Length: 360
Ligand code: NAI
Image 1: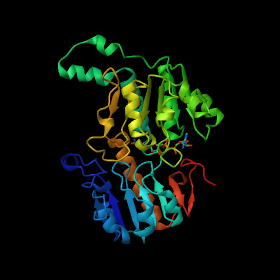
Image 2: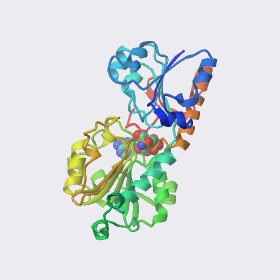
Image 3: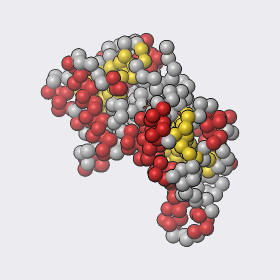
Image 4: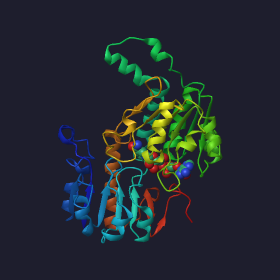
């Protein structure tokens, strides 16, 4: 089989650190194994435009491996007109929105991902980002680097997480972990919004209350964290109109997908003070352009921005888990064995998950 894999270039870091498995250089650690089985394994970071290695190799590729960190966008057009032999699109990680799932279903291409592989990594990151924003950490650190010392300028916008109402939009694997990790901070209340409500016993254990109306949910939260996949029902969901329903001065953490939030509306809300802070590691296009407003936007007090490149789910611990998971999925695929059900996003022309919107 021909297996095409799109990863980011790791450069010097990848040569010095072999555990950086999701780099072109280290190729998920599966190159020798695939070759020993007689498969052709092509690995590239070149993914944009018709002359990219990705698009040139696609027509006779059987299996495509991609990651959300350096996404090769497998659009409907590519699926319908170029990916003539493709049978499997495998996401080494979690989140398969870079694949047009409607077109994949139409062409009966299976889409699998390594479900759960980096959810702990992301949940930890979400809690860190909340602390960064609520405690006004980035502005304080920048002041320290500059050589300045003005405690009041920082403290005037620094708070505790304790006593705040915190809500997750999406209460799947990551959303739940975030809630459970927040409990020891003694928040005023933990809320969630999800069209797949949690079983009662789990909601009770987490101490989380379901608010089924989105504007009502947002209006109650001091801090909102987004943990839903990107699909037709979430693309551009947090826009100028919806931001009006947030409490004035709320903090928003989005490590789910950049395109769930409208680029301009977020920058405007931060700059006007409607949001006191915005943090995350996901962008509406990756790599993000140099002039993307989320790189430099600030609240009226000159802080409130804790954006980073997309790395929350790609710690070295996570890379090992999703590289191992990728190999497991491939082994099952080659041997015609059943996949772990949770890893199946679409198969046989149908959605196997309830997480990508409501489908019949
Ligand atoms: P999951 O499938 O376990 O849970 C997603 C939840 O979101 C489900 O309960 C689903 O019902 C809910 N949901 C879907 N649409 C919704 C909507 N319109 N409103 C409210 N809730 C909605 O997925 P998991 O593992 O929790 O991951 C969530 C997302 O996080 C992934 O799809 C991916 O986009 C992102 N992610 C980001 C990473 C990073 O490195 N920044 C790494 C891993 C995941």
